[in-house]
Image (cartoon, rainbow, N blue to C red; front, side):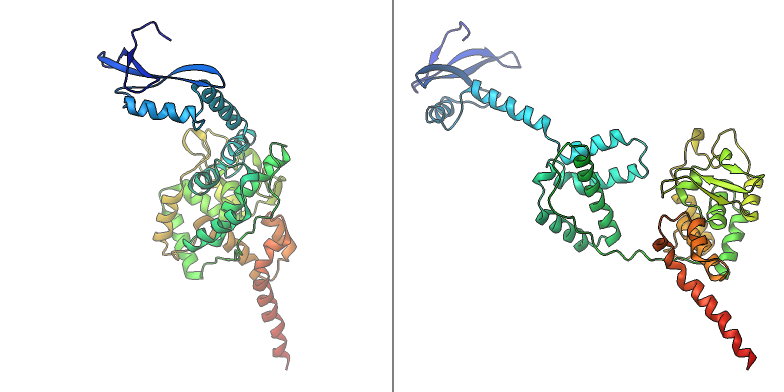
Length: 369
């Protein structure tokens, strides 16, 4: 207790001293005095201006402490410190996500996942540990997203991210995880995009004349090889074997490196493409992997009068696959290898195109009658 003059108030056990406010003006600092468990306790309860403290408020606080409704300051600080330590040791979903990103810095699509986390998961689940999350909460969360007209595929991606974080925590023995299965919405992801002959002619004409040759080259590679966007953007010159006629796709979506043929159309695109000083075939600024293609892709799509829901690069990959399947000369296993699909189920969406072609071929027998 500072050796300053004490001023009594009309409330027993409540007094104040004169201190200095932040504006260097005199300010009352209120104290209370009481006994607990036979021990005399004297402690400050607040300042006149900073805390808007009054003798009556100080007396009310003293009564609460005498009755045990409030802890003495020293015990309150100890409790707050214990809570702080406990919180710092809690593996919350937000903390687990930070740890996941730290341990997986090169994870594909992590920037998109981070946006999903901040937009959809952080506010509701961020401060909870996996064991504190209930199945009802997740069910309500899923239904709310769907009710807000989020596509089932979008909802599935969000829930899959949450599930991945929880599984990561369990695998690394950071938490116990959850004791229920996160239910995913039914996703109809069988969207096979294709272009009509007229649309294809329009697109090729635009790609032949457009000034952005890098974007044109990226689109033509998607059309002629069926490579994914990420695979094209990460394609390096040393991944291309012009002599043997192969392209090595490093770390594709399926995981293991894959080799696909370098056909004549793709070869012509690469041979005519202006080679820069960087190792990437289609580098962005300072030789880094491109990130922003939306504007030029949509500009070309609009110029070619393609459908509004046509996805420029993903759609061209589908166009490549649809064309091969519709020839009737490419079996589904070969198509699976060319598309570097991890499972045959992913290639099955093109089966009907091949079946239609084979049916037409089979009907040629009618000409024998």
